Image (spheres, rainbow, N blue to C red):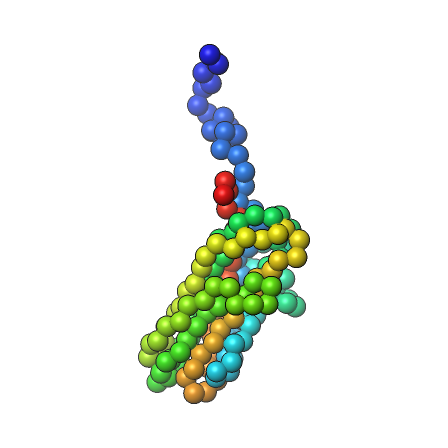
Length: 160
């Protein structure tokens, strides 16, 4: 039989193993126009955190983790346009340029839409980007604010 170790924080953490990085979360610093009936890449230009420098917040607005594994990825967009009828409002996460996760919602006046799910990354070239689509009849702004209403992020899952 092995020796019984005293339960300390260090002993507990060393027994769990793994970290859920790379990870990032980004927001918009201002509004962004979303054209009617067009999928528009959201330019999340404000990094809340980026543990490994894998998110590009100035050029491509994409996350390309260099560690292979499964990641929980999410995005949320807030639209606010009084009187608009959002008969087709979508948030999409594209993997390597193709739609991978998305949700569609209908509402009137304003609202936020969220999607998230698990994506397997190869650890070298796979990347994700967030897109928004709306069918209100005209261009509408995605809300950019400091309270995280419009955001994009991912983190590596441990043990899967």
